[in-house]
Image (cartoon, rainbow, N blue to C red):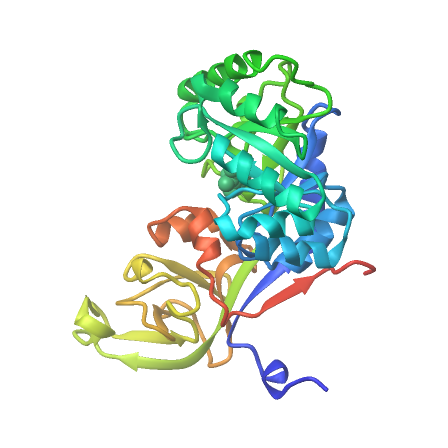
Length: 383
Ligand SMILES: *Cc1c(COP(=O)(O)O)cnc(C)c1O
């Protein structure tokens, strides 16, 4: 029996087009040389799209490997399909090592100490453990600093229980600094050269994320890409389509009008009285606020679509409600749909626009959509 709460009318929800996700993977793959493997980055609940549904569809579409942030995300993917290779992108807490071995995951390793820890965990379990060696070429987060790569590589080679499954780096400014990105590529290639005996054909050798795909080097030893944002149909470079890769939006974010009311010129709107009406106005109070993921930064600057028309947000976004100006939209009524991200009757608010309105980046805007917002899946498999 379905619970009462799941049968109630929706006030604020996200719609996820899984068929578009699948087409995006295929279109990204088609834009790459055939030998490039596809690492689907599905951390943070698949960028807020829902890990189970997104990962299942990406499996169906032919992802080669999944990348996640933590063990709990990896365990969710294991529940879907036992054989899939999974790479953990974040550093492990010491007491997490044994779960990497148990679940058969690949760990990201930056230091000799981590190599030894994982080797010990593998020995204790009587098994082997896979790792991807990460090289810090200038991002200054994870990875061994590039001139020191060889020392960690040697530690890996000297541990029989540790199997090197990949080697990679991550770019600091792939979406806006091609010169530094090229320098990072050079540093990575030089680090690879110092690892003698490295088998370039069996390893995953990867660097590019969504932002790198435009300047991707296909001639070198790279044989995999890590794709997060772009597979969800969002370009990391607002306003420009990435090279020849065409993707379509997967995500839309919708709410409804809860109340329509009139206020005279001179009245102030919402908390802090940050907006004063300049004319007699018709306002719509929407059933979504910052507790749903509509950032308070969108106060007095974001827009929504109602009847396909753009309606500006007036005053502060509040926890559960947001006020928009519908003076110029005829006959708005309680119950009408309002679009925060997506299309409606020829109008469109892209995720890029929504993020800019919230004074943030698309990655954060997507992962800020909260648990209160049900995700509805369009085009599940078999339809
Ligand atoms: C999140 C992440 C990615 C994916 O980046 P996108 O820009 O979303 O494609 C790739 N690699 C690493 C290490 C990451 O943390």
